[in-house]
Image 1 (cartoon, rainbow, N blue to C red):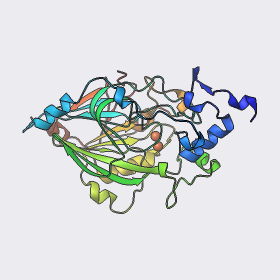
Image 2 (cartoon, rainbow, N blue to C red; image 1 turned 180 degrees about the vertical axis):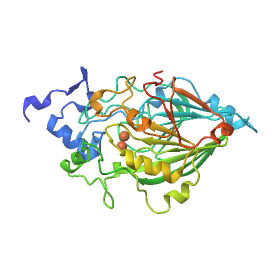
Image 3 (cartoon, helix red, strand yellow; image 1 turned 60 degrees about the vertical axis):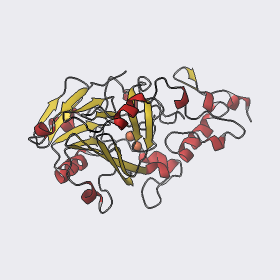
Image 4 (spheres, rainbow, N blue to C red; image 1 turned 45 degrees about the vertical axis):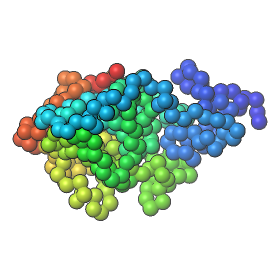
Length: 327
Ligand SMILES: [Fe+2]
Ligand SMILES: [Fe+2]
């Protein structure tokens, strides 16, 4: 091996310990083989790699035990806290919280720097991820009693009911940046029926406080038969639409909105200047939002919704813009 190849790879001025010994070429091959993120430990024979660091996290499960012992829960508002990109925390009227899709930079470096800071070590009862891409799967970062990664089927806890529907990732880039071509270059198939595992997806329906919220993740715009019927009525719909049309195009997003007719639409997966670098190639969602019949630019990263108020709305776009919680 060339001595040049033994040098640790440096990203963002920090040494990437897991990448020591990998050349840039093998690093990219690893990204292709292992998906859009994780360098497979199989590529580092004889090296032990640290996995979860959750055993080091502060705090304990007392909050969850309290909820577990409760025999009833109050009625009230559902709280939505936005952490940028697709990371949304939902807190039930009873105080049970679930955070979806904490993000990180691609640890292989192949996809560059997307985020301006590490995902905050925020306190939450449950952490969930829709799929294994780096911008959705920093499940070790939140201080979380439970981690439910890519859950399919039903889960109930306190006054939260969560249903996961397995489907597939958007596999044709609708915008100018043909990121799906990178998978071809790595020799991976993006689309079904033989898609690589990291192009699998789970969307989540959360029922709490009389509000049904659908976390779309990076799902394709045309899900498999039975998907729409399984989901039923949606009150709050998150959709990954940005100005670059990275995951879904404006038209695809609009068609999903017309199909589900949610009361509220929350754009995700766009360039939020608080959390996200231009290097992500994402753009703000302003153009999509402003083309809608009715929209509101939110002035904070927190949104409280009561079921009775939501029921009066019709396809109202509520846009977090550059607001995001960073702690
Ligand atoms: Fe993705
Ligand atoms: Fe994504």
